[in-house]
Length: 480
Image 1 (tube, rainbow, N blue to C red):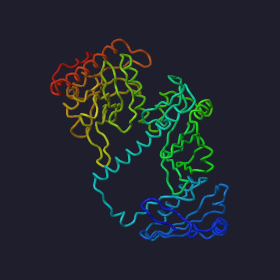
Image 2: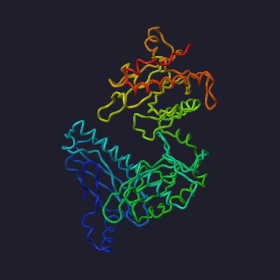
Image 3: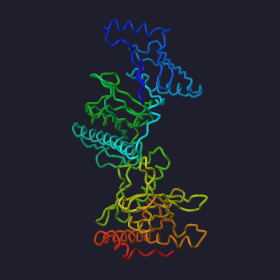
Image 4: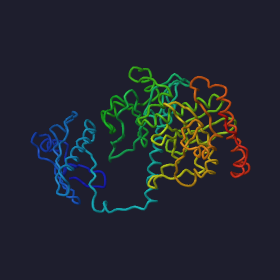
């Protein structure tokens, strides 16, 4: 019997659950293990889609079968091309379950009439999406805390697990305490139990593509940890059932000793530094953002300020800037010279789920660090307080685009430079400077001057309010 649901479709064998083991085995042999066995058939009543499934000989045998089921869909509502596409999708999904204890599971996007006509209030949909995101973040945090706790309970000493910020494929590094030489890259996955009985199944998503890393799989509601080499996982979903051979092979009781053993196998798990881990992003834009962050952090460190990436990637706060007895919540932006506009521009907006793109509010961050790039290198940096952005109606109003106009930017009209001249009060020119070399004295002096002006604005704001702060003396623009 095949039961249709909104997402999951479950395959069950009819009238077999009450049979003795010996009779059940004979029935399964007759039903499924014969070369010419009859197909399993069903019809989705709402969409009139018929399906036939042929399970290959040996599919339920004790030894893992590598041969995949075959499928045939038929319907008068969908074109043959559409049905063929769904058949290929089913084959792809079946590959991820090959060799796992799961008999069969898949999802088909055949909505029922009730589902097709369903509508949901925007506010309710957004609340549901936020709750789901919060639940994922909670599981991630629980898995990391559980790993930390298990490491503390281990007899291994002298090592630590360090979180990797941003969109890196590595969630954490296992390294020697206080070391900057690098460590073992870890990818953390969390899952809750599914299925009934005393042998639940844990399904971990997006597990492929982590060669050279160690997958740490955490059953958050059971407190179980599995350590799986990334090179050993080729499927997008990795399922583990309690009591299975996969459970016995990868489960770890002493997390510390398991991590140390993999740490010493540098040939299988090449060590990387925290900086290198931060640059291991899938998207090119994320790599560019991290590279720009590292360059800005190096320049700010030259005048005694620390720019540290925020661990929460979905926040309007990208990093924290500390120095001079003050800490600022920072939103980071970067821009190349865009064509055909021949201008540097950044977007001042954030994603708000089903509400789409909305404006930043004045309280989302304290400071905007906007980098101007040339050939991937940092050529200049704007340090714009959010109160100043609010004065120019760039935050707190509507999603907008800000044009960045450094003094050497190409402008066809003199009025353009005049319009954006206010930006120069918060601009630091970095052309000719490079990292990791110490920036020239005039660059460090200008950077310290702008940071002092930013700090003065926020001190005045805290004492007398935003309006008074904006009327106070600001940093004079540099002379070029």
